[in-house]
Image (cartoon, rainbow, N blue to C red; front, side, top):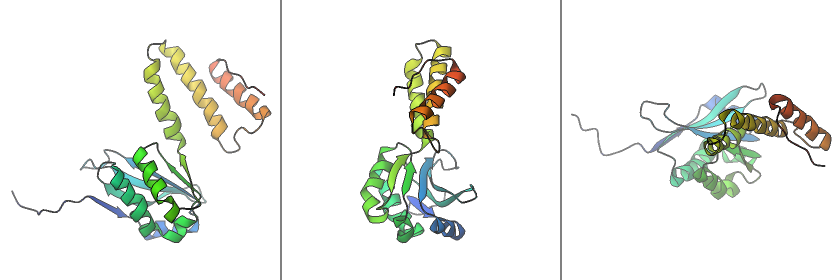
Length: 193
């Protein structure tokens, strides 16, 4: 057995120059999430994501890290992002989307004034809807499975109709959303004016 040393890799953040150039062109919306069990060391991999003008997704930053602790997220949002993506570009960011992780929320909130003063913080639709509904499903298991799945499907379709571009902004659009959710499930819902 060979002795490698006393040092342990806690984390590393990197980016490609071409991805940073793309980010600098349009930093208005930035998404950050952590994937699990995607590498041989089973370390979490943080990925910043953007969509370019051609609707292609690219990752301007990646972070090989320890499990999600508050100090790790503080390091990512307070040091890695401004150092690698640039403070000027981040100052033009208007929306930062993350999942519902408390450490991520706290780290963004703690560093927002310094690097993303114009940005709003939002939850991504996948985590808001799908992960939240998974928790609801566990509570609904006592009910008839077919009925529970129908209720969840109707709820999901209705919410997605409200959150898509253009969304639901008037009573007329509410009725269109109501009709689409009723057509998809045969369920019952109502718009109140």
